[in-house]
Amino acid sequence: MESFAGGADTLVARCEHLPFSRIDDSIIAIDREQGYCFAMNLTSARVWELISTPVRISSLCDSLCAEFAVDPDTCRRDLLSILTEMKENGLVKEAN
Image (cartoon, rainbow, N blue to C red; front, top):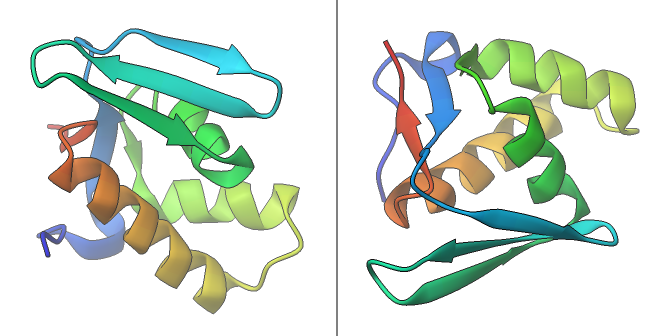
């Protein structure tokens, strides 16, 4: 499992080469190079929207806590899980 070297201070952004479309509360991203289609639920779709430009993981967590009924510890754990899965699949990257 990949992780983020800077922890909560890590800047993350989505990879630009992936076209995506919103369908209701979900987002579908297509990796033509790898031949994969990724479906994101409401929470993952919101993360995807928030990382359109580089943002710190801690700021993402703050935004998500304000929008969803979730405590900071649960949010941080779930967010790291979502971002790690996205990173492993080439959807997000650590930004500088």
